Length: 122
Image (cartoon, rainbow, N blue to C red):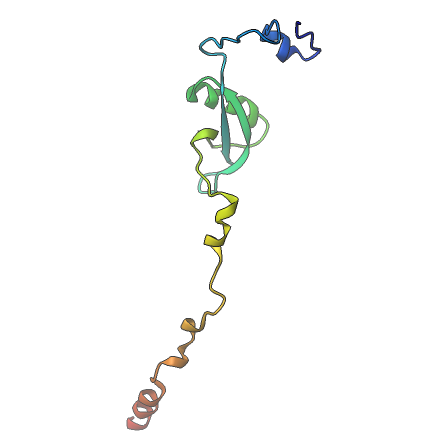
């Protein structure tokens, strides 16, 4: 059974029969790199998209061609998507804040008496 697909990406792989073993040659399995764009010096880098590339240097070239040609750009970052760490959705309780913030109030300090004493002594 051959894979007669209208998608050129599938045909390019030359998959052959559905049950056949697929061997990936070196350079065929490209990584996904996330691209961050800086519009002017001192500004934050903003995520603008991703590129597929075999190595970080080529990812930077692809990112420049894709995201820095039309829009003003002074710097680009590329980061392999697999290298980005994130918390799992189940860990969202770690980000809950303490809604009681009475520790910020100055009501617990007994300084008003000292301030009044100081004012009277003048």
